[in-house]
Amino acid sequence: MERYARQMLFSPIGEEGQKKLQKSSVLIVGCGALGTAIANHLARSGVGNINIVDRDYVEFSNLQRQMLFEEEDAINATPKAVAAEHKLKRINSDIKVSGIVTDVHADNIEEHIRGVDLVLDGTDNFETRFLLNDACFKKGIPFVYGGAVSSRGMSAIFIPGKTPCLRCYISSGDQVGQTCDTIGVISPVVDIVASYQAVEAMKYLIHKETYSRKAIVSLDIWNNHSYELPLTKQKKDCPTCVIKQYPALKSNNDDDNYTVLCGRNTIQITSNKTLNLNSLESQFGKEFKVKKTPFLLRVHLNDEEQFVIFPDGRVLIQGTKDLERAKQLFGNYFH
Image (tube, rainbow, N blue to C red; front, side, top):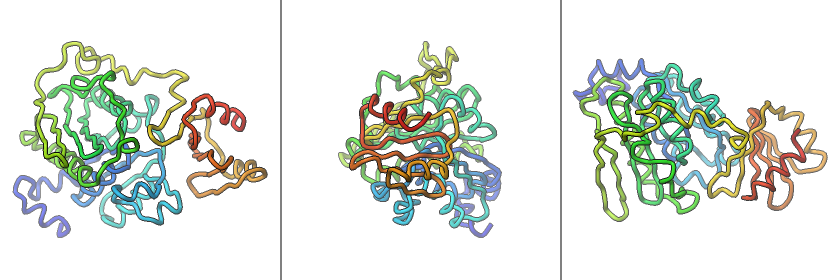
């Protein structure tokens, strides 16, 4: 326990709280700026089982704020979940870290949250946040929300049966579409929001919920603003925590196979089958420049467009925002 000696000297945690952390299991969805900072805090704090799910790979533009990654990860296009797992295991070999390279959606979210004590939001879009919110409230698992863009950030912990849910405060119609890919972000606000998330997770995991922040905290560190919105009553017609319809878990239709990645000039198309990278390397290598790693295959179609292919059936069509163009390219090469 020498590793955690200074943390155990903090009386609200102590030795008893440390043992609870070591027996805890969490899921972090999204391993970008927030996700890496959250994972770093929880791994160093001794949370015993950390599961990280992310669909993307490391690029040089990530290194400004995504603290677990290095230049080599960007050069090798290492999946973020894999790079994070490797780094965290070097930080703390006493805990279990699992990096899962996949997209989280309505068909697999309940599988990912099974058996965990807490879910933390490291995502960059409200579509996934509503999915996490609905799944957690359906299964009675606390959900720690966080968001950071520009110099602004927000965070809260939502606990089924004790607090309202995210939908009580933010509806699907309230999304403004601003992300770090469209208006930028500075790294200090990421660290602050992730720290809020991590400490609320720790309070819950050691059963010290009386210390939990019972509000959504909102801040702007550049313009020196901050305020709290109390978590009071549920919205009377909330489809998640009142009516219990969980709308994000029911959106299974063909459109779900197509995702426009905001600000990335990229469209993700998900196949209904796994993809063999070795076979595809041979196929595309006859006509295009290709680069294969253990985790993905890059195919340069022309000066502007390329495929990034993952074994789980996902294909990123980079270089276009046109959904019809992306579908056409996908249809030409994947059957």
